[in-house]
Amino acid sequence: MNAVKKISELSLTAFLEYAHRSYPEGPTKYVVVFQKIKLDDDSIAFSPMDLFKKCDSILEGGCILESLIQEKQTGRYSFLAFEPIGIYELIADKIKEDVEGHTDIYQGDLFHHVRLFLKRFRASCPPEIEHSATQAIGFITYDAMRLMEKIPDRHKKDRALPEFQLKVYRTTLCFDHQDQSLVISILVKLGENHQHDYLNAQDKIESLIRVLLMPMTDSGNNTLFSEEKFTTEKESSEMSDEAFMDLVKKAQEEIKKGEVFQIVLSRCVSRPTRLSPLDLYLALRKVSPVPYLYYLPLADRIIMGASPECMLRLCKKKVTLNPIAGTCQRTGEKNNDTIEKELLCDHKELAEHRMLVDLGRNDLGRVCEVGSVHVEELLKVKHYAHLSHLTSSISGFLRKHYDMWDALKACFPAGTLSGAPKCRAMELIDQFEQSRRGLYGGAIMRLDHAGNFDSCIAIRMLTLKQGVVTIRTGAGIVHDSIPSKEAAETHHKACSILTAMATAEKRGEIP
Image 1 (cartoon, rainbow, N blue to C red):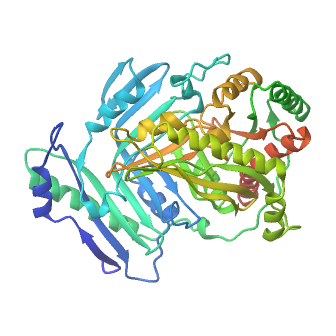
Image 2 (tube, helix red, strand yellow; image 1 turned 180 degrees about the vertical axis):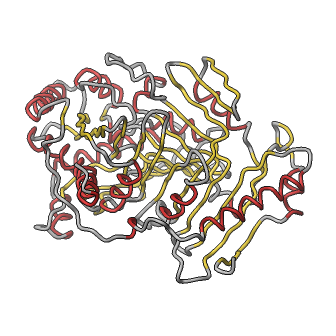
Image 3 (tube, rainbow, N blue to C red; image 1 turned 135 degrees about the horizontal axis):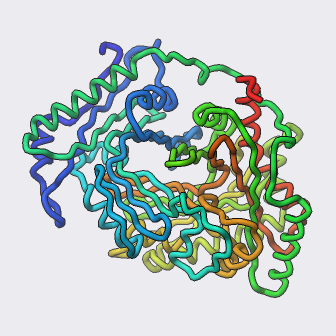
């Protein structure tokens, strides 16, 4: 493997030391073995998708969390995970745990039991990779908010979709965009012979490196192409523009009565496709470079998306929200400076955004130290492929004895996907919308071995099930909203996904 430069790895001596550590819940049962490598051959290129395709051919249960915008907080790393060894989920109103083939089904408090579940997989992890080695990846649906608030539920449930799911993985990869390095880590369950456990893990890492150095058989991922225009003739919507505009007017009546200040309304559109899941994801990531891309295969469907918005981030007790509210479609007719001036002079967008910043501050105030919550960044315009957004950043420090799950409960769902006041807005959403939201407006989550938590809001996403793509998009409604513009905004937000589909189908000549 002369093409690879080994930067660091866990030695046998260190492994044996970690294997004998103890924690309050008992002796360690797992140790993270790793190698950090860097290509020493300019003729070979690593990319997250190349890595995934190669690993997916030999490892099961793969998923992707990556970034195509290298921002300081969100974009340095891309994460791949394979071989789930523990699955915790809430499905059909019951908690289900599957650990290495053994299944338990019971009822109880979701967040209490997820803490206990994760303790079973607590690992001794070298500090130099505890941030880059993934412990678990999962999601929480918007509809799981009923675990925290008493909100009506008048729509039919999708009983095959978990409302909460978290998977602990054996094999994970972390690609560092900054220095073009790769950390391969294995979660090793300790047996009777610790040296044997270590050598098996290192053999597996060496085997993976050999696979990663093999040439790609499909170079389609590197092919340059231009975006194709999409048509609406293949789409079916659960609600016409006229019906959606009527809902906007109803929401404005509630605003006039003082029931809410702002409410986010959404609707679904579906479209058949013969694209493979990975081809669709490859096209989506090309037309939608954003901080959070995700590809999560479930039992009966594939979830994928390109979200610009962080739901909640926790790092060393500092918790951060990044609300996005205020949208302008990007076209060739306006440059970035013009778009920024329009957004920053739009009183409706500014009022909506400030309202949601205040809501985020209040949410954090429920779990953060008094006086620690503050706005780090206010009303910054960020530009993405098809849309520009007003964004802000709010942070605080968690109180003693509070953890990521307390923070999530306090802030979920995001005000930018529900409204203000949040509970009344969610009641009206259940009344006005035509179906359950499912994962839309929920969150995609990642946990590392240092106890840190990062998540994005599940927006700009699609569900691929039995050859049909379903997309849900929404718009924030306030007193001054123009119904036709809000209906158009839901179309604009679906643009990146529909463009990706049209592009991929055109390249593959798929009808």
